[in-house]
Length: 112
Length: 111
Image (cartoon, rainbow over all chains, first blue to last red; front, top):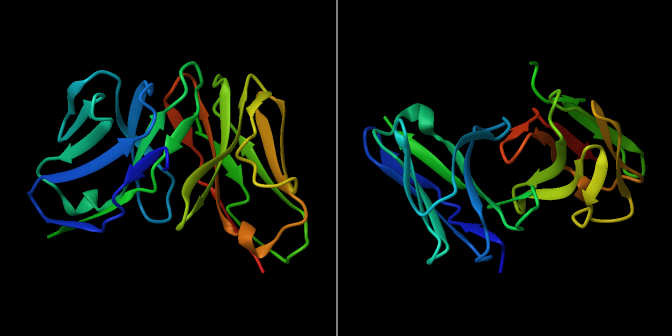
């Protein structure tokens, strides 16, 4: 089992809809969770991070964490064509360490 | 700040040749990471440093791969000899805490 798993997609949503991206992780002791966006041919860039159970909102983005279910998600409201990218979930698995394990990413396409 | 700077952006080399990838982290960042990205395997951590000291190199695939960080502003990843299966995008990232900043990557093609 991989440390971090994501549905590779592709996920297609119409413009203005809510896009829901999901991620599961294997280590119950994981402490911090990150969502990165990567445009084709570019480097990953941080969208947001979450440490505590529940929801965290930042503009059109909401991260949701459920440690009991080992599940983290990213919701994108009012999706725009510019949101079309690959979204990478990353988890800091080892307590005290600073290295992140990344999922393979979900490719999102927002259709105008 | 100019961000994390990697060079070269693209490298095409013949099998068996030595390849050296370079990275300049963001000033003040105390962690430096080397990742490799392929379509099949996604982003894989190869090695990371804390205050110039290698902490975990368990992701380095083979002895053909080596990495150094002689000072806080420079790191190299070397592949010798290179093989076609090493073809990938290699990213360097630096961080202060858990928030990473990635460089633009080096696209390596070994023919």
